[in-house]
Amino acid sequence: MADLNPITAWRRLLALPNESRTKTLFMAFLVSAVCALLVSGATVILQPIQTANRAAEQQARLGSLIAGVPGMSELLSQDGGTLSTVVIDLDGGAVADEMTPGTLVAALDDSANWTALTANQDLAGLGQRPDYAQVYFLRGADGELSLALLPVSGTGYNGPIDAILALRADMNTIAGLAVINQSETPGLGARIEEPAWLGQFRGKSVADSSGTVRFAVAKGATGSEYEVDGITGATRTSNGITRMIRFWLGDDGYGPLLDAIKRGEF
Image 1 (cartoon, rainbow, N blue to C red):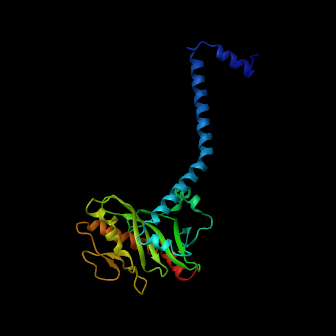
Image 2: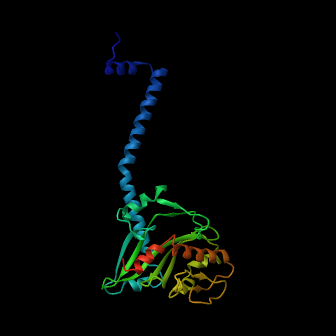
Image 3: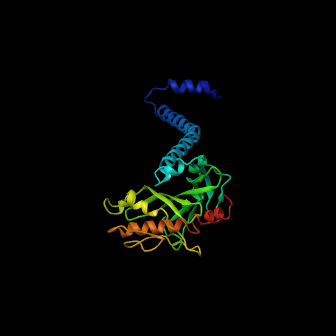
């Protein structure tokens, strides 16, 4: 009867000449299996650390970007003012109790946590919208909400535009806008990052008495309380900003959240 002792079999294998096809194939398989096991183990062990690091990086980046919103430094330095962050379920406009800023990044890596937008819904040209969003609230010493900071995104002339929109407590008055990412044409659409242009947003209303979002970047000089001046030669970028803000303040964006805030739920 053949000796099936694994130690004996291993010794016999090692005793084979190095040019033996059997020995070569087995050793190649063994090395591959060990490497695969090490990679898989490292992935499992490091994934929570990588997720936490990504969340921390995003948190730090957003925190620094918030300070760039026109007038934000003054608002944040008010006596007793505190800035908090919360993850919102966009469909219902409520706090996502099962989600935290630390787990949001990993959650949004899952396509199941995104909603496809129809052509009629997709004003901002996004294609899809995350089901959850991290927003910021500034509260005064009395605990009353004084400002909501909402990350928004859309499509410009050359690519994506990302920004943070700050709304006053009435959820209808713009406190400021900070563009944090854009690839528009230098000297034209890229002027959306200029402080002078962004400064126009402060104090503008976003919706009329019926609740219809009317904010727009005008085609030229502004003509109403809902408009800011357009950028000459950058019509598509200007339209992109209009559509971006209208989408995110509408029913498919932060609309349910804004309604909840107006009802006093926050």
